[in-house]
Amino acid sequence: MSSRTVIRGGLVITASDEMHADVLIEDGRIAALAASGTPAAGAWTAERTIDATGKYVIPGGVDVHTHMELPFGGTFASDTFETGTRAAAWGGTTTIVDFAVQSVGHTLREGLDAWHAKAEGNCAIDYGFHMIVSDVNEETLKEMDLLVEEGVTSFKQFMAYPGVFYSDDGQILRAMQRSAENGGLIMMHAENGIAIDVLVEQALARGETDPRYHGEVRKALLEAEATHRAIKLAQVAGAPLYVVHVSATEAVAELARARDDGLNVFGETCPQYLFLSTDNLAEPDFEGAKYVCSTPLRPKEHQAQLWKGLRTNDLQVVSTDHCPFCFVGQKELGRGDFSKIPNGLPGVENRMDLLHQAVVDGHISRRRWIEIACATPARMFGMYPKKGTLAPGADADVVIYDPHAEQVMSAETHHMNVDYSAYEGRRTTGRVETVLSRGEPVITEREYTGRAGHGVYTPRSTCQYLN
Image (cartoon, rainbow, N blue to C red; front, side, top):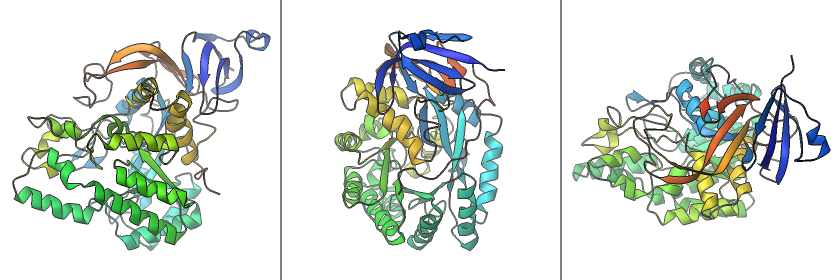
């Protein structure tokens, strides 16, 4: 049985166009767009009509960096796939790509199967997986080829966290060489973890235990150094590189230089680096622990370069690195020792609104908003044009967005399963009103009408920016 929905009268915004158009949805996909008020649009009939007059009609957000149920520091990220994807939908995101974890001594397959088991039947929106590679060996390298074939086309490595996720330069080079052959994309957490561990030990020995020292030991220069090293290793391997959660001016400069040299090097930043700073890490009474994440928040002066990087396309994607830990009972594990604070912030629900605020504030254009939050992440990770745009044949992942509604971000009103908001009390202009995932209403005029299990696993092709 065919089902049809028409969205009438909104301003349709994609990465490339803005136009007043009606959108016809049929059987979960975009069937047609036509200028509002034209005979073609007027002739459409449907079971469901959504009036988007005065609103934006945009593609659902694509958040390619989330950590639902991630084990970290003796605890787990507080959002499950059920709570986390529901919160994502409330924030106008309709696709996430989460990170399956290979534990040392185990295969990639075991890690991937474990994450499929966590997610299957629980997600309100569609999802895919990247693979964290913690143990590079001959078997792992062969498995990478198999994963690319089945739609897990990106692999994350860590220059940080010795003893947990860390890979040395030789392991990184081997994985990059493999990805150069199989078409996969290496995602890099670029911080010099070996050097950072020395600085952590020295800070604690001096009695510097408060959360703010987390930012002081994870120096911007050590992010820049690791970014530079990752770029050079990728160059040696002839492989593309995607650097995650870029936070420092000096790291942006390394990416810009590599891109100017014509290398296939890409960079992602996150809302916390654009809107928060070391001032938050320094909040008294251990409140700064709420803002402990890695790479860490930087002094405010770094923000200008991140915004500039987004405008000049030296940074291409804004993802959340959503990895929430409750303040009570989880962040508190690090009282008296900042190195024991679980690293991560909640944000999957806030990204689209914060980036719309950046449009209001004049940092980026409306189309760039959609580009960095929807279209580019979908292209980068092999999901475009199924995801990330509004065009005939695309999945009907559609957000009706009210650009004039005002809201105050707060833990009292958010839907993430965490007891604080990183943006508590922040006033923003713009709010999600209705969200469709493959044509099905997940949020209907600010009411949750979705269900766990609607979201389906989405295999991906390889990065669409590579020759």
